[in-house]
Each structure stands twice: as structure tokens, then as C-alpha cells.
Amino acid sequence: MIGRPGAGIFLFLVCFLPILSLFAPQMLQEGNLAGILNQMVFILIPTLGMTIVIISGGIDLSVGSVIGLSGGVAAFLLTVGVPMPVAILLAIISGAMIGAINGLVITRLKVPDFVATLAMMGVARGILYVWTNGIPFRDYMGDAYYIIGGLRMIVGKLTLPVFVALALLLILTFLLRRTHLGAHFRATGSNAEAAKLSGIRPDRIKMLAYIASGALAAVTGVMLAGRLTTVHPAMGSGYELETIAAAVMGGAALSGGRGSFWGALVGALTLTVIQNAINILNIESTWENVIIGSIILFAVLIDRAAMALSRGGSRRNASN
Image (tube, rainbow, N blue to C red; front, side):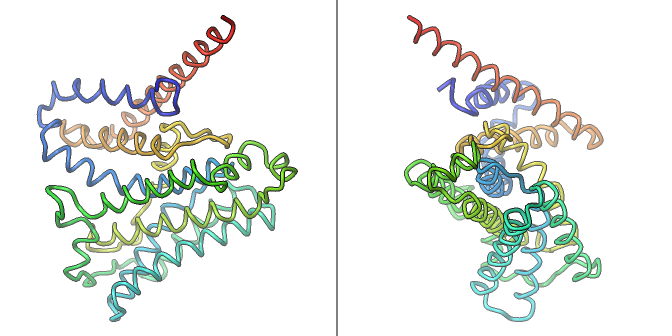
């Protein structure tokens, strides 16, 4: 357990929650814990996509803009009378297409991942600003969309997005651990040239990773549009950094080849707990980024120390 990526973060979270509850007893109340889960999924789902990209050796800085633009696509289509299932499907396809463009630019034009996705971040966000003319989309909410956005409970105090995230987590974990596709992602991220020599097509794998990231960001955008009840031009801003932080906190290696979806869950949960604690403790918003950044760094150092301790123990056992 202790040697798995993200295990140190999990232990940090287990210790962190009781300490927080001393200062804010409502932290561990049922309603607040359910609220944390309901909020966490909006970070978790795009983090799953980011984890795929990082495992394959890339990075996707366009996630936040894709969330905003795909949410805008869904909202616009609903306002002009397109049936909800069709509007949602087209919004997810739009996100996947942006991911495909990222993949093509990176694999065919050989533009570095950072540069290509940074450019797409600006392009997608710019399209949303021009499209809305700075005015949010409104009046697209039907009864069913309140459920999709998580504004109505469906099981106890949990909302539909929680179960969507759980389903995606289980499916992707199965694909990563039980199929050749997962091995191909890891091999491509570890050493693309060696993967190519073994018969893997790294360019195709990277394309799939970016398409998955775009589609999962779009799923988030569709649900976030329902949660916020309006789509403003800045919707999704900052998600690219939050998803990278959650993935890294969960044990994903920015050098590629390593990552875990369950680790992504732990990272997203830790990030959400920190944000929730800041709100409950009424800490000034000006300090929010400083506190979150410091705690993330501390938590990651704990995780790395746990990994190093585990490796040291394994070596000693092997030598004996």
C-alpha cells in the first residue's frame, strides 16, 4: 500500500481531515462530506483525461478551455431547440475533436505538447469569448439538465455526476490495468522509441490520449454548464492547473510512463478538501492560492518520501 503512487497523499488526507475537524467540526458532517464528493467530480473527470495524457508522456493545457467551449456548445444547442441527448453528444464530440487536433499537431507537425496545447487553450477560449460576445448563455436549463448538473440529488445526498465519475473511473481503470491499451500508454510514455521497436505505434497512442482528454473535459463542461446554470466566457478557467496538480498528487510522473486513476481520485479529493476547508474557515480568498500551493507541495513531498521508503525496503529485502 505505502509504495503505491498516491499512497502518501492518501495518508496525508486521512491525517489532515481529523485535524481540520478540530477547527471546523462541520468538516466531517454527513452533508459536508457529501458536498465534497459532489464538488470533487468536476475536478476528477478532467483529471482522468489528464492522467491518460501524462502517462503517455504528454501534457494538456487546453483542458479548461475545452470545458468552457464544450459547455457553451451544449448550452447553445439547447437554446435553439436541439434535443438534450443530441446536444450533449455533439458537445462531447466537439471536445474529442479538439483533442484530435491537439494530437495531430503534436504527432504530425512535431510541435511540443506544451506549445500545442497552450496555443489551443488560447484558441478555444478566444472562440468562446467571440461566440458569446462576453455575454453568458442563459435560459437553456430544462428539468433534466438540473439533474445532469448535479443540482438535484438522486441517491441520498449524492448527485448524478458522482455516479458518472465512478463509472468512468472503473471503466478506465479496467482499460489501463487489464488491456493491451494500458500497457501501450505506459510504454509510449516511458520510452516512445523503444515502444515503436516493440510494435507499438506511439503517435496513434498519443492521439488516443488527447482525444480521451478532450472528451472527458467536454463531459465536465456539459455537467458544469448544468451546475452553474449559465455558461460565461471564463467558465473552466484554471482547470488545467488543477487537473495537473491532482494527477501529480495522485502519483502521475510528468516524465511519463506512470500514473493511476485511483491516484487521480485521491489527488482530486485532496484538492477539493483543501478548497472546502478554506471556505469553511472563512480564509480570505487572497490567500487561497498560497495555501493550496503550499499544501500540494507538502503532500507531494510526503508521497515521494513514502515511495522512496518503499523502494529502500524492497532493496533491503532483496539483498537479504
